[in-house]
Image (tube, rainbow over all chains, first blue to last red; front, top):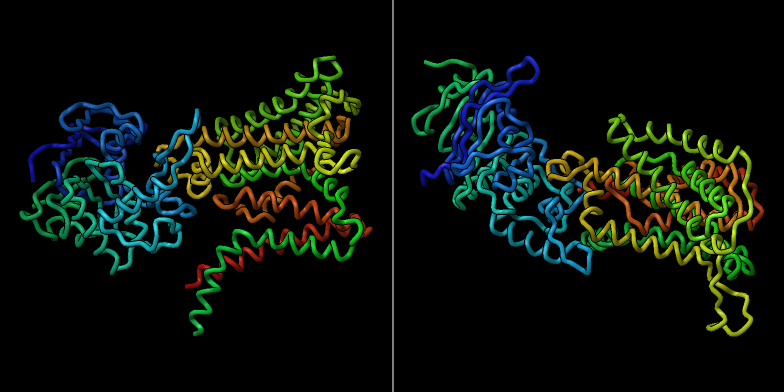
Length: 248
Length: 335
């Protein structure tokens, strides 16, 4: 693992009216690192991720992508910087085929006169190549997402997030809705991404997930940084303690 | 062996999904031809059906796009009336015919834009409410500007879209009475343009995505409100074109123009296989839905069936069509 820091959040605070959702939170992640973020409901995980992806604007603090300070005004901005988010509710359109979902909003087009038309052939080809690169098996790139299993949908969501050379992928509870036998496939996929040099932030309640893929784990508690450790230097019990706000 | 039979059957499902509705039209046409061998398939009657459905098809196409986004537009019947009144007043004011012709689509466009802006900017809980409001507003405005009385008599140039005839003398010989209605050509061209728009452009794809999962569309960086405004504006624009066709057909702008036609449009879209929950349906299906309604009305008229029975039948067909869709879905999700 190189020590190149791809994303750093410094002293992030976020207020909603009188409520303090985040208070002076720091986070950093290096290239090809898998960072686990844990915390109880309402600890600020989701808010922090929404700030990182540009969906929320932080009230205080700064974001640095590859060492450069940036101003995010929408998810588009963070996408352009190589950060992608895989949402808990998957954010896929079930009525559309796999390929359409992967390229939704960024469809390959060909120019005919003054008009841009969808390039169906190119989209299909790019979809097949990308699925093969991530070792995702589906019957066909034209299959509708609503026909897929939960694990396959999660795989499509991850494929969607990484289709445009993402450097950082944030996954919100990537295994929460999955059958046991499908969890392993998604975790393998995370390790695949790591091997391709992608940094992954995994939000999860499941210690099995955290301890099988993460390099480092950080805990939020009531909107603040509570604890952080390399995975090899901590234990499940300790991390569970952090979630509940207990430290030795 | 059972299995192989099963799999050919399963393979046929997508085929039926795509073309089953055309099969239904074929059956209707065959039955009506047997019942009315001299009249139904006559050139005159068929062109008559097309002339009747041409303006309704514009409403159905617009409402279809709205329904794909999981929305609804109840105001199209009033938009057609208001655009017709706008056209009539422009005509009475003595404006040149090409300006008068532009008035109807322009009024429709503005009405649709008003709907779209209302739904998105006012954050209406459902498009049903905004367009129910404008259903009253647009017809009220139409009656206010016309004084609530019909305005009759337009120049031939204005009527050409709804009433024009393309003579077939060159093909069928001099003096032949057969012709193709201009409105049929216009309908085919517009349906083709919107088929291309919905299937081969990014905005078309996004319209389907919004109907499938608006959250996914938003997460993909799609400006959902902007797309919705485009969709409702286009729907109004198409209703305006419908007004232009109707002006030619009836040579009159009248207070009850398009009354309840929004319900016919919704019926045609649903019969054509679009899902009321959004994300599903095809332009070909809308065309088929419009044709089924048109052929049914025409056939029942030819057979002297009372208009009340027509209402009962159309209502039944809506329910049966959707029930078949429910059965199909049950079948295809059972694995």
